[in-house]
Length: 294
Image 1 (cartoon, rainbow, N blue to C red):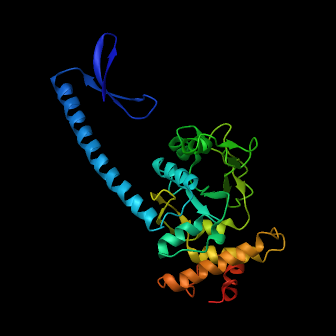
Image 2: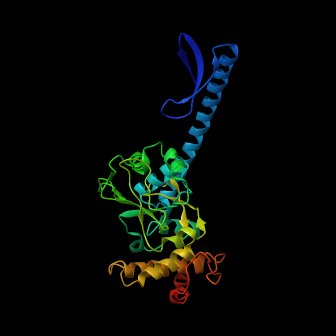
Image 3: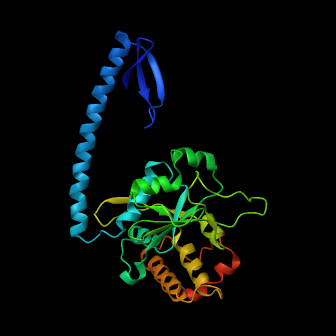
C-alpha cells in the first residue's frame, strides 16, 4: 500500500502487480491512515516470519547437501520454481529424463547417475487449458520471459521454435500432445516466445495420473515437480524403445530408464501395482508390460 496523489488529493493505493496496477482504497483520512498502519505492521510481522522460515530452510539445505540428497540440476529447479510462483505448476508436466528426479524423491531412492545425465528438460503443456489464462499468469512475457527470470541467458534457439537454450547450452523444450485436425492455431504465450511442437504419443502421458513430489536441487533447496505416473512413464519409455523411427542412440537409454523406473515402482511403491491397468494408456503401450520383466 502507498499514498498516491491524484489532482492534488492523496489516496491510499493498493498495488496488485509489479507493474504498478492496483486500486484505490479511498481518500486520506483517519480510517485509511489506520488501514495503512495495520498493513505495515502486518507486513513487518510477515517479513519476520519469512526470515525465520528462510533460516530454517537454509539450515535444512546444508543438511540435505551433507546427506547427498541434492539431485535436481540448478537450472531445472529455478525454472520449476518460477512456474510454481506463477501459479502454473499444474499446467506443465516434466517428462523425459528430468522426471526421474521426481520418482527418486517419491520413492526415497537414487538411480544410477548414468541414467540421469541430460542437457535438457521437456515441459509438456496441457493444451486443454486456456492460453489467455496462462499468458496472464506469465505476465504477458511468455514462457521465454519466465525462463529469463530463472536464467537471464535463455534465448530461443530459432524464431518460432519450440526450444530455448541458455549460455551453458542447457535446453528447455515446449511440447504438446497431438491435437485434432480442427485445432490448427499455434500454441504460444506471447510474441517472440517459444512455439510448442506436437510429439506423437504424449497424449498418454498427458492423460495419465500425475505425481507432485518435492525433490531437492543441487543446492539442497526444495523444488516442486509435476510428473506422469511412474507406471505410465515406464510403459511409455518401453514403447519408445521399440519404435522403428526412434533415434538409435536414444533407444537403449529409453529401455534402461523404463526398466529402472519399473523396478523402482515394484520395490519402493507397492501402492502402485502394475497389474492395475492405466486406462489412460493406449493398448499398444499397455502391451509393453510383459517386457518390463516385473
